Image (tube, rainbow, N blue to C red; front, side, top):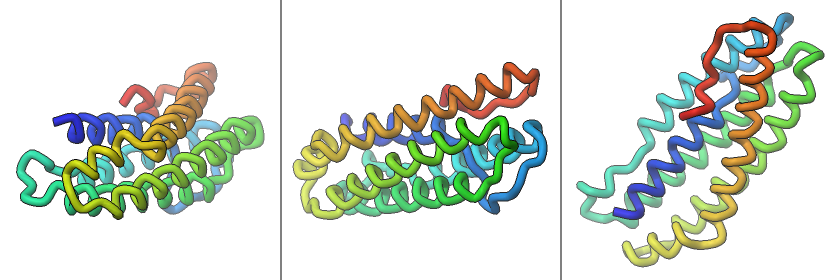
Length: 169
């Protein structure tokens, strides 16, 4: 089903974009910073997996979509709040600030899409919401946010820090 594919792609994109820590914190070294990021990536992946809807077994796909995308928006917003709470080392602050800014855009777009999905009452309307401007904006914002993860992974790699920020999904 096309809706399931979109939801799966969005979940994968969120995992790929994952960069943050639930409790925030101050990282005095790049190693500590990237450890916080990687730990948060794992938690966010678990949260995203738990929110993935099962449209194939749903009696009411519209309701399933409303619940799933509300949870997804909550998750993205919380994740970006966490990312914002991390204090990176000075040499990573520009990359970190860019990730936070792009993450805010992704969170806003996730909420807009969740709001559009909340207004649907039929599977046809749900499909229209997934094809609408909010879904396009969300996908674009996630791509931009994901690129910040790639940049952070590159910074870790350049420093010889062996860590996987899961930017590839």
